[in-house]
Image (cartoon, rainbow, N blue to C red; front, side):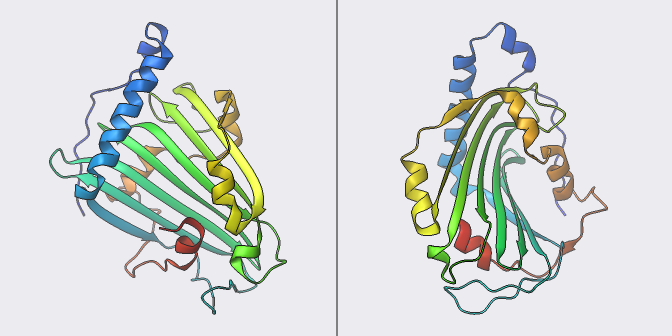
Amino acid sequence: MKKLATVLIITFSPLIMSGQNVNSIIRDIRSEYNQIVKNKNSFNKTVFNIKVNADPYYCEEDEMWVASDVEEEKIITFYIDESTNQIRQISLYEASIFAFTIRATLTDYYLKDDRVFFIFQRAIDMPEFKARVVEDRFTIATERRIYTVGNIERRNIENCVKYLYKSVEGTFSDVNELLSNLTNTEKDCSKLTEIRITPTEELIDIYNDKNEFIRINDEPPSMFFYNILFGQ
């Protein structure tokens, strides 16, 4: 498996925060983010299908059916800029399916010099089964945008520069449009302790084959629920 050299250069240092305007930091973050988006198609893409549980059971293409036990899915996608041998984006998809209850998150980490500077998270929650067709199911959709100068986790949120949040409820067919029409609400960074964000160091260790507790499935991942929930 490919190895990445550890780079100790800090692009956005927490020490800058006291002497630099926050808006200036955010402009720098957005500029770096736009560079990644612009060049993403040229990056090398590596997908890991993580062994979490048995594959979910489903049948009709426009309907969701699962076994009675809890099923879990976890897919990690790394986007590598081969010209610099750096991970530029990590996409972490996690889903839990129990009976007809589905909870899933797709978290995108944007990095420079192995340090995260922006996190975008989309969460889909279908808490109850009242419609067989996916588009008609009651859904809670949430988006989070986290501007940061370093790693973020529950016990380590001091790197957070700005935290934006929005959430809507409706049928699954409507939530995307509802979210796009909703303005972000700025929340205090201390609220990040209420959610789980996997540290990027842990994800990079998986790529570098340093995490012995993670089991990688050699089979390509089933993209059924992933494609339906996030339209990738």
